[in-house]
Image (cartoon, rainbow, N blue to C red; front, side, top):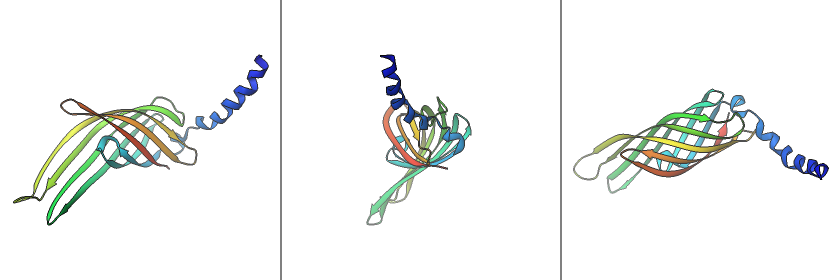
Length: 159
């Protein structure tokens, strides 16, 4: 019976060999679009690995619109760090940081702006293909006077 298990194990485990490449070390930069996530609707992000298992990330997002001369806009700027639990191309991670948000409107007698900050903690999972494609899924805990849970998906390229 043991002899029959060897070919089955090889068939199952050989394709996993591609997941063991240290692509974060080979391609330490990545640019992604995050749908949902720490900036609610979307954000454009850049991450740079500063150690084998730790990267720094910045992101930006903006939403605006209006009609008849009345406009409204919201701008997000995020920054933080991400720790990977393994050196493999497929790895769970934990990220955290701060988001600066500012919003304004020209509706009414003048333009009004308000701004603030909130923090985020995001456990998740990342997969990097050897060609550079990147996929991340997160659960974001947005923290300010309590917390709000919001999912996020990143798609991008590592270089």
